[in-house]
Figure (cartoon, rainbow, N blue to C red):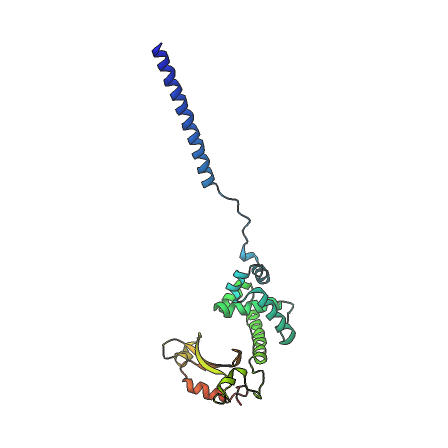
Length: 243
């Protein structure tokens, strides 16, 4: 009797242990299955199959990504495009739209891309890229001429911020400074554009008013040119702000 009871007890313990182990294995197996299951991914977008315009339109839907590629948010891009088309001569052609042309230009200057890379990304010929880049650049220059100027070219009034310093700062129209902007040049011009720190640049001068609006930007001087030479040459430019 005792042996039977003992056998039943062992049988019960064995059965309980079996089911506990089975439950543990099932739970563990479920966790492993969940951890190792391959999630269903949406169909990948093959960039090679997108035209340049399609790529731009796709990235326009993602503001942060658009800013990485084109150095501005989509709303600013749309406003800039509108201004260029309406007032600065940027037009679409049968081969390439103005939206793609502007995006091509901004992508190139914002991320330092060469024309070969532009042609590859936008799936365009080098001739088309060169021509459109030049057209957009003309619009940029026109835009710069329109906005890089003082509100009052003759400075007929004294800025309100100078009132408390009167009359010591009367005649002061703002502040100017210079900066070296990195450039890539061919070997023949390398020495001329190498600045005192050993890298190639343009020596650029900029003037702003008391509202922090740029009123003049002078570009084109090689990095080896002295700051005073840059300033003296800027004085001779008709658009340089002065009394």
